[in-house]
View 1 (cartoon, one colour):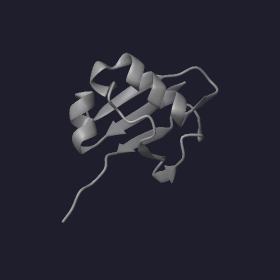
View 2: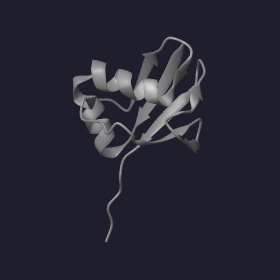
View 3: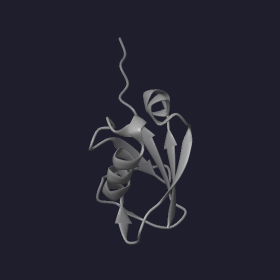
Length: 81
């Protein structure tokens, strides 16, 4: 199955792209996607093992099951002051 991964701010810089389509074997979870990205994209090797994500525009835990065509947005930490 193909999952569309979106990256913002520092995660976009790490990925070298705003978007990547990742092929995963079904069944797969967000945690599987994170593992795959950390293992296969050198820039994302330092991606946190438990990043904040949204699946199809809804915040979701790493245990969320993915389906073909899902969109997973990786939301970096934000600092303010």
